[in-house]
View 1 (spheres, rainbow, N blue to C red):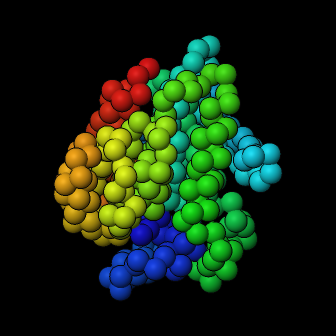
View 2 (view 1 turned 120 degrees about the vertical axis):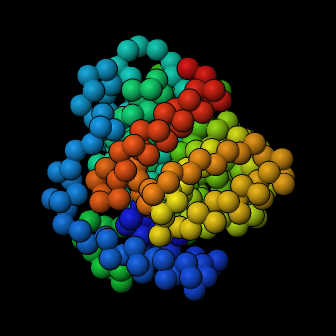
Length: 283
């Protein structure tokens, strides 16, 4: 499991399914976590749409069953209307600009995009692996899925959201959680996963919604073989699935805030993802 070139040492350390090889992957990717923020956030990309005048976006706060409160990032078209919604499950803090940008890109495409803050237990002051582990040690997969469900409940309560259809899109660990959530929820009609983290068949055995997976051939954090294995397992249980590979693209190739950003692969993958979501969610 990893966070898009920012592996979640805060989460990965408590996942029992990780193999020794996967843990080595996490350790290698962690070296990228400490890149200077200025270097990452000042990079521009053709896929950046946060300044698009046709959309509106920003932080939102929502509750689940009127009790627990978390935040998230929401983007939607400015034009009045009712739009299909897509949950965005991040593989790293949702404050990193490409996560809000993903929500914004969904809005540009005619969706409502919401990224629930599944890392809400991780304080801004946590910078080292040890601090991150301590802050999230008790926030396990089931808690993350609950956070996502809180976001889904919030979306269904909005007047500008279609209530009868919803998609989910995730990156790395978030991609794995997207498939897990799709398997558990009867209200998810499409799943898009970018280089999903190592996924157990038990997590997706009930997944019936169509799945689209994107993976770079040069991914050194999550091996392409993981997605290829997953596709075989999904096809064996008659789940509709397609895998797109991107020659020479590394892990997190859609994240323009990171050195592994690949503009050509990002544009092509996003076009495919949007087409897939429109096909399965409508417009």
